[in-house]
Length: 295
Image (cartoon, rainbow, N blue to C red):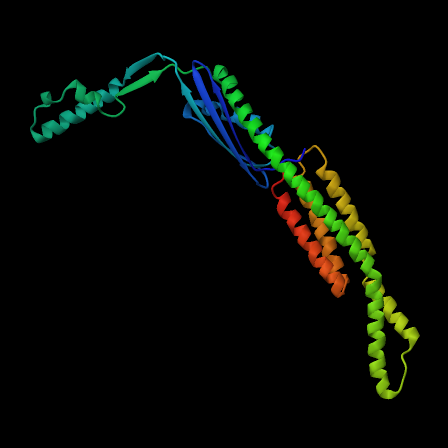
């Protein structure tokens, strides 16, 4: 199935204890680059989330944002760092002694307000319980994202189908023009020879003219290139209609198409063929721009 690399999907899981929201944004990228932002308490689930997403999205820059809320009444307890509290008290006492102040002015409440003296600890949740809930939100986000990518992929597929057909037409027109290129060269060469030889009252050597035309015809023969061009177009169409991710394969075939087009353009030294080649290469460039967004 033809899929674009661009899309957005949002998924949510909600029950009486938790709510997970997952947003996935995807854009074109040469490789599969997944960046995930999760709450600190879910950091241990990041690798599972990455593998789940990579199993669906084969290519692209994927940005994932996970937000989580819970409504549980957690068991919390306060831990006192007695060593740290004692250290703070001694430090305050030393300051008081140095300044000639009464240490009694410092209360236990004052010491408790120092950093890290009091710490709130709560019971951690079982990640195995949380993962199915997060996974459901991820799956919904992926489903929405894929719906958008497939719809965009269908639009690109139609556009590429039309452009490949246009390239075939232009290739056929160039093939039709090819014999005329040789004939036009023959006439130009004959006329030039007549102009030069007329100054000495001589006539062109037809055998020599035929030899020069044959050499030129061999140099400008584009039959093989046109056959390969058509073959690459067949491969491109076949890959477009496949089921796997085809972006990289299409890119490779397009490079071969462009190589043949350049060779044809350099050989077909003709105004009409040249104009056709400009249009053909323009279509190839438009195809190249489109497939940059194909998975």
